[in-house]
Each structure stands twice: as C-alpha cells, then as structure tokens.
Length: 136
Image 1 (tube, rainbow, N blue to C red):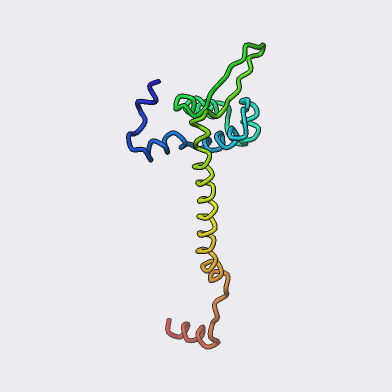
Image 2 (image 1 turned 135 degrees about the vertical axis):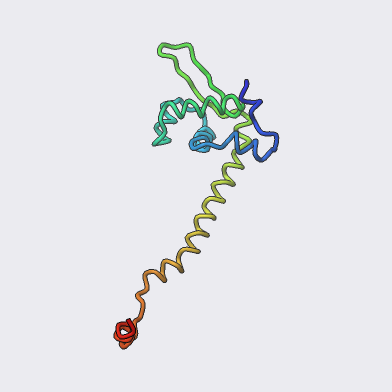
C-alpha cells in the first residue's frame, strides 16, 4: 500500500486528502445508503466517467474507507461498500453539506444588494447631460 505512505502527517490535511477529489464525496454519500455496484454508482453520479470513478474507488479502498467485493460469477459482479472507517465519515460529510448550504446562502445575501444596485436605473438630472456636453 504505497499510497498510505504519501498521506500527510497533519490530521486535517490527511482527512482532506482521503475525502478530497471531485467524486469521492458523491461516492461516500451513496455508499452510506448501502452497497452499490459500479454501474449503480455511475447511474446516480452523472458526469463521472467509469475510468475516473474506478480510480477514486481504488484510492478510497487503499485508504480503508471503501471495500470492494468480487463475486465469482460470470460475468464477475463487483460490489462496493463503505467500511466502518468510511461510515465514520457520515457526520463529517453531513457537516460539509450543511456548511456548503450556509455558505451559498451567505454569498447570495451578500450579492443581493449589489445586484439590486446594478438593476436600479441611474437617475439623470435633466440639465446634467447638456452641462456635460458644453464642458467637453
């Protein structure tokens, strides 16, 4: 497991490395519901390619948050499950989602006065336009 050696020593940075990535939060979110096959994950996570999804799952498997089970069938069936360590991330993922919603709302609130100002037409004094032309 060479990837484990590459993990940072700082705990917060280590956690972000394990769950960081474009699709890892999505994968964890859906695996919290229960085991999923690769095709199920691709269906519920639109926009992810199979190659990238497999890469993310392999990294998560190396980090011990996802387990991969291969069934001896033809064709082979592979099921991904969140491990106990992976399930321990549930409150963290929930907190990140809550914070993301609050952050979006706060930014919208900051943008509303600016947007209202941009939409409001400027009032022009009747003689101001003529005065500005005579100065030029």
